[in-house]
Structures are given as structure tokens and as C-alpha cells.
Length: 311
Image 1 (cartoon, helix red, strand yellow):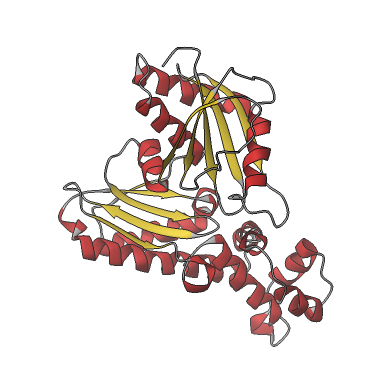
Image 2: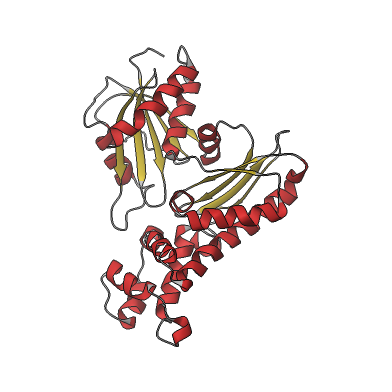
């Protein structure tokens, strides 16, 4: 790949889509986010918003497009030629970001997934079944539990939670009747998932109900983690547990509880929470797939420059 060749990496989540424009020598050139009320990060609209944002200050002659999971439509109009299009899994991106080739990944964002890969290549992927059948311990899961807690806040003093007033203000509601009407609307799961950050704020502020929601969500995903570890017999070796997704990245309460639970059934695990966006892992994979002259140097350059373009 020529030194002037560029990569446009995407991370389409349930709530938002990130895009990162990177030169083949690792120099970060552009950053974009596609999001909006009720807009899925996996929609074509979110892709285009993120791409146009990332290309706003640097327009290359062509790009190699790489994305997590979602297959972009060939008709995606970026305004420039697309040299190639490829796809990676969330697990591959997380391993790349953490510098690992095997281990455990606990992803809690809008949805949730637990994935394990042993040193001899055995794999297991649990959950990711969507908001009705799964997504245990996810932002949607947390948001839904918070809505239920807010609905019964006035039933008895022991049910009282500051989440009620925060929720009414967040969604522009005035009372329980409004909340019931809101809960019955057809909406993208990102609408409910967006409230998870507020739940974490109230938990950190001392509200016991909010804290119970956050720690309960961490306990539930830890239960799935244990199932993966047991089925893959991963207690026989030391592995890294990589935490990723918006909930894990933003909630220390959630992450600390997950690590605490994991130590009870897998004491040899090493928890790692990379403080970089997942789209960076996608870009690193692309640099490796389209060999540059010096991958290690390019990766170091990317890690050193991407924060500047996010400002």
C-alpha cells in the first residue's frame, strides 16, 4: 500500500457510528460520528454522517473501507472512489486493540456479547441475541431496568429513586401516565440505551436503586462470562479479559463489579479495559491486512495521533 493510501474504518454500534480516516503510515487524518435521536448506528444514515465528518478536512483520492460486522451497501456514496471494502468482527477489533490473539471479550454497549477464544483456537460466542431474547447487562438492559424502577418510585419509600426525575427530564415527560405512553411506543433500542449513562451518574451519586441496577447488570453478564469460561475450560491457563463497549468504558462501578465477580470463578484472569475507541482496533487490523512498510511503527503513529483529530 502506498504511503499516501488511506483507510476509512467504521465501528457501527447500536447507538452511534464512528469513522476514522487513517493514512497507511498510521497518521490519523479525520474523525467522525454519526448519531441522532432514535437513529441506529448501523443505519446507512449514521454511516454517511460519520464518513462525511471524517472526510471534512482531508479528502483523499480513494479509500479502502473496513467496518465491523455490518456489510456496507456498495452504493454508499462517499463522493470519492472506494478501492476495496472488507469486514471484521467485534472480537477481532477488540483483540487488535488489546494486542492479544486469544482470551475473553466482554462487550457491553447498546447490546452485549461474551466471547472466548482459547490458545488452541476453540471459540464460544454467547448472547448478542437482541433486546428481547438477550443483550444481558447491556445499556438497553440498564435503561429498561431504570424505566421500571422509575415507574414504581412512588409506590413506597423503599422504592424511591432519583432516577424518576432524571428520566422525566431526559425524555421530556411529566408523570407516570406519560412514562407509560412513552414505554409503549415503537422505538429503536438506542433510545432506551441512551439513559444508561444517567443511571451510572445517579449510582455514582449515591442512589441505591441506580447502583443496584448497574451492579445487577454487571452480575448478569458475569454469569454469562462464567458459562463461557466453564464450557471452554479456560481456568487451566491464564487469559486476558478484555472489556469493551460504552457501558464498560464509561462505568467504573460496572467494570469493578464485573472484575470482582470474575475473580471468584476465574482468579487467573487479567482484566484489561483499553481506553481507546473500538474503531481504532478496526483501523489497526486494516493496517495489518494491507501491509504497510512497518506495521509496528504505523500502529504507534496511529495511537499517538488519533486523539488530536478528535478534539
